[in-house]
Each structure stands twice: as structure tokens, then as C-alpha cells.
Amino acid sequence: MDSLKQKFAEKALTLYKELRAIGKEHGDKVMGEVTLSQITGGARGIKMMVWETSQLDAQEGIRFRGYSIPEIKKLLPSGPQGEPLPEGLFWLMLTGEIPTEEEVNALTKDWQSRAEVPQQVYTTLDSLPADTHPMTQFTIGIMAMQSDSIFDRRYAEGMAKTDHWDAVYEDSMNLIARLPRVAAYIYRRAFKGGEHIAPDTSLDWSANFAHMLGSDDEDFRSLMRLYLTIHADHEGGNASAHTVNLVGSTLSDPYRSFAAGMNALAGPLHGLANQEVIKWIFEMIEELGTKTPTKEQIQQYVQETLDARKVIPGYGHAVLREPDPRFTAQRRFAEEYIKDSDLIETVWKIFDVVPPMLEALGKVKNPWPNVDAHSGALLVHYGFSEYSFYTVLFGVSRALGVLAAGIWTRALGMPLERPKSVTSDWIKDQLK
Ligand code: HAX
Image (cartoon, rainbow, N blue to C red; front, top):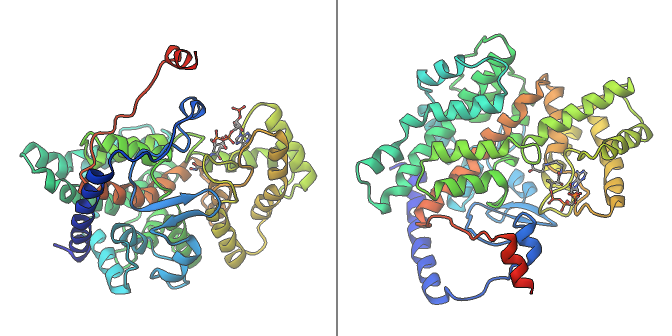
């Protein structure tokens, strides 16, 4: 058993016993109430699942195992320019411990050894029109690997429930190892005429991904390390994570549950917002006829968007009530690495203009930028302007969090998810 799996197994068994005991003793304790507006308003704030890997605070933003993004940047093993390695975050999410450099290097090597993508995935992708949306290609690519599922095979062979987590661990590690290759293949076939780039196994997970996409620029490698770290997890209630959890709770294998989650990420109110942001900015630049719009011009354009009854992409959040620390982390990166970018200056001007305008509407609960408000401008700076691909990058990163959480969920023996729905007549009856 590899050292990460060994460490996880010890911790998981302890927590499994502890949670069982807590459940037995305190199972009837009331942990919250549900209001009518929660039932009709997208289940905001209803606590209904255990998610070990991270927790979101409305004011502070995400904490991975208790560590904020600035703390992660300081504590996790990093690349040559100091940006954290996502391998380290995955280790932390699974074990609750900050890994050593040796542990992270071993994980990089482990993923390299699992990264071979079966030929049928490429054949399946090649059968799709090249202009199929990259997120559609991504979920099809994931599903084309499903026949390799170890969980699926072992379940059919009669695996004991206590072994479920082990099979989910193996599938999850294989998936994470392969996703950059699948994603890079999609990018190169959609936008670079199918000229594919062989992996460089001397590189870490992020730098190799950058390499296969087509860049060996040291700064871009650093951006990818940061990007793939900060997008990895946002507790369990967001649409993609919750979908993975829901589908996985039926004992559908990690390929199926992760692909389902990626279809949720592909919605414009969720992960697809990263493509919508840059599309909206490009359209603004085109309409205004300038790459350096003034704040007044931006204000006018924002107003037009609102008057057309559309949302301002990249702003607002279902939980956060302050600027997203993932936005701030990307801004810090831009300040450190990038000088003189009109597009990034525009993103910062939008940040000055939009919040007061959304606040003035009187209905938006969070007028601040979320993670998607900044990411596109950074990618465009390094030559990746094909914005329909951006959500795939997000998805590769999100695999780390949702699959780590999925391993925990199976190790804790969580049951089938089955909340309760009600009819409008039931609501009216209750109010009588
Ligand atoms: N622009 C205009 N109106 C907005 C808005 C925005 N950015 N954000 C919220 N509103 C509106 C809502 O549409 C809603 O209007 P109605 O009552 O007329 O339907 C009202 O303000 C109240 O919404 P809320 O309670 O503040 O926000 P929700 O929890 O319902 O929704 C969303 C959260 C993220 C979906 C929302 O803020 C939004 O649509 N933002 C733009 C899209 C976006 O950036 N999504 C990415 C979110 C982060 C993420 O998941 N990344 O992957």
C-alpha cells in the first residue's frame, strides 16, 4: 500500500468509528431549522452532508482543512517560483496534514505512473466534431474511461462494503493522473489542428499539463500550479461537488459521478462563468471600440447588461459575502508576474465599478467578485484566449477536491442521499 493510502486508511478508520459513536449517542440532536424560503430558494444553507476536505465561510472564504489560501501558499511544497503544488493540496485534503516535499514528489511520480490514457478515449473524442463544446468533450472523455473502473469491476465481483473506499481511491488516483492528458488532447484537437504534444514526465502535474497544452513558460507553469490549487475544492454544497456526492452515494463509480459533476460545472451560473466573464469583456471591448475602457464606459456597459436582464458574470455568490480570496490570490499573482496588461487593468476597473452598482439593485446578496472574475484575463495573457476551454481547466482542478472528498465519503460509509421534496399544495396546507 502506498504511503498516502496507508496514512489515509489509519485516519479514516478512526474517524469512521468516532462518527458512528457520535451518531449513536447524538442522532436526535437538532442541528438547525428549515425555513420556507430555503425550500423554495435553492436549499441555501441547509446542512445535509459531511464533507471532510474543505469548509467555506461567508466572510473569510475557503479553508482547506482549516488553512486559508495565503496559508496554503506559505505552507505547501511549491514550484520554483513559490506557487503551491496541487499535489500537496490533495495530500492535505486526504490526510489533514501538510505533506513534506518527498511525499509530494512521490505523489507526482505515482500520478505519472497512472497517467496512460486508454486509446478508446482518443478514438471516442476524435469521432466528435472538433467544435463540440470542450466541456461536452471532457465529460465524454471521462465516460470513455469508465470501462476501466476498478470500483465497478470489484463491486460486480462482490467486494465488501469496507473495501469500497479502497476501490474509489484507486479510481480517483487514476482519474486525476489522466485528466490533464485528456484535457490537453481536447484543447489541441479543438484549437491547434490536432497537433498533440507528448507529456514530459520530468515535470510536476501542473507543469506537465501546461507543457501538453503548449506552453513551457515558467510563469505560466506557476499560474497553472496556483490555478489548479485554488479551484480544487469549495466545500460540498456547490452544484458540481454536490452532484458528485449525490451520484456517488448510489455507489455509481468515480468516473460516472465525476462526469455528472462536470455537467453541473458546465452551467453558466457555476463553473462556466469563467468563459462568460471573458466573453462579456471581449464583447464590451468590441462594442466600445477600445482596449482601455474608462470606468465611466464600463459603468455604462454594466448598466446595459443589467437592463437586458442578464447577470454580470464573475460577480455574486450563493455563500460568500466578501470578495472571494481566490479572486484576491489571482490578483496578487497578476501584480507579481504581469506588467502592463490592458485586459488585467480592465478586470481591476470592473472590480471598482460593479460592486456598488449591484449593491444599488437592492436584491443582490453579494456584490463582490468570485473566482471566475479574474481567471480568464490571466489565461489570455499567456496566450490561451480560447475561452470555451476555461471550464475544462476548472474541472481538472475540481477533480482533486471532489474525488478526495469522495474517498472520504466511502471510507465513512455514508448512505444513499435522499432528501425530501414537497409540493406547492403541501406548503399551502402547512401555512393554513
Ligand atoms: N448580476 C446581476 N444580478 C445578480 C448577480 C449578478 N452578478 N448576482 C445575483 N444577482 C441577482 C439574482 O439573479 C437574483 O435576482 P432575481 O431575484 O431577480 O432572480 C438576486 O440578485 C438575488 O440573488 P442572490 O441571492 O444574491 O444570488 P444567488 O445565491 O441566487 O445566486 C449566483 C448566486 C452566483 C448564481 C449569482 O450571483 C450569479 O448569477 N452570478 C453571476 C454568475 C457567476 O458569476 N457565477 C459563478 C459563481 C461562482 C462559481 O460557482 N464559480 O464556479
